[in-house]
Length: 128
Image (cartoon, rainbow, N blue to C red; front, side, top):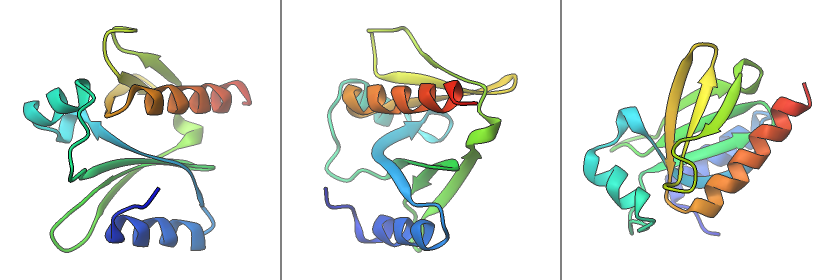
């Protein structure tokens, strides 16, 4: 799968920094998304210009958002992750990531991407 140039640069930086990507999928963080973006993602309509990506590596979960001049990256270390749950299971393609008492809702453009990420995170949590 080809990625936008700026995202590819960010992925290359992660790989050269010793944290290579394992899974890269378009996804939205609820707190940074408009209602329209979330509705399009819930419907599974892949926007022609995806601006938000979830990147899972061996050490972190990164949320990469495209900016005008550079990408903004927000990271969650995997060792701080305490759980992952479906939100309204089988009704949408959203997952809730838990870090202690805090939780963040992630909406995937494609429900199969959400399933892959869910399985990956369950394996990470199980291996602790």
